[in-house]
Image 1: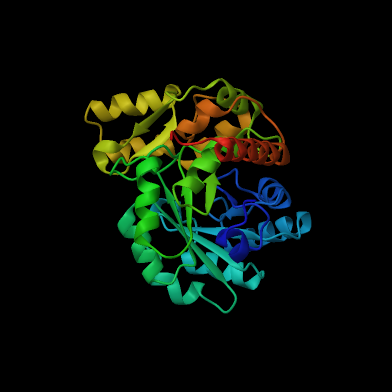
Image 2 (image 1 turned 90 degrees about the horizontal axis):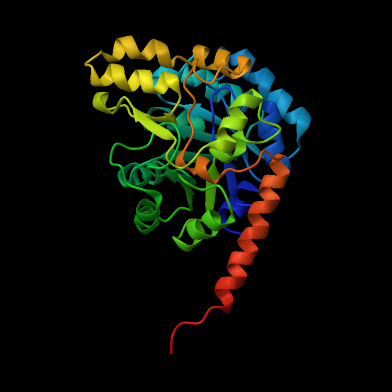
Length: 324
């Protein structure tokens, strides 16, 4: 029922891509997503070297024989080792799907596009989607204002952004931002997308390697429990509204410079909080879809629930009749 160009190109059962999350998109979660029929995406920014990344790729392969991707983060602050080494590690380990995000992939296109390699580019603006298509991306992922992490400063929600991007490009579009259930999945398809990307919903899964307290916080969260920090610096980030996020906001409002705030948002500090279960010790990127997450489940249960609900929504829509 839900076969699209995305499932065809990627060789997956369901048109769902796992949103890349530093420290969390590692072998166990990535393999579980792929085994459930989706596309798991391994975070390269989690690893400190090319060899470290290659070892993690091998771990994924030991857990699944299904397709998965490697994310190449082009954010300058999320490059623990050279971008070229990330791409080469993926190629050398036989990964045939590369996802880029954060900045334009143009400087690396020739290195990415080896024979048989599929390129997905993730962005948050119409013009960036068009540029990615012009550079030869096979699939464009676009995320709305609701997403975790780095939404566009244009502040355009997915409901408006997705159809605008679909109209602007010919390649398949994957939609993200605010999607966590079957209703959101069907809505994205109705807007013209051919797949969805979800990160926040997969945090509240048994396979996600984050402390249980963070999963419980996500279960209890409402749609208003996220906050945007660093807007005044032009580098906005959506986070869970914990004590540290509130502190960063107050510092920002008080005129504190970005150089004093960035150490509070460091990845290593966040990793330590994830391990210890201290909700206020590090930043916790989650999207507004947190308010739709009600229970920790296995990845497979999440995916099954999404498509059970999607089929129900689809059938209900098919039975509806327009007036007259």
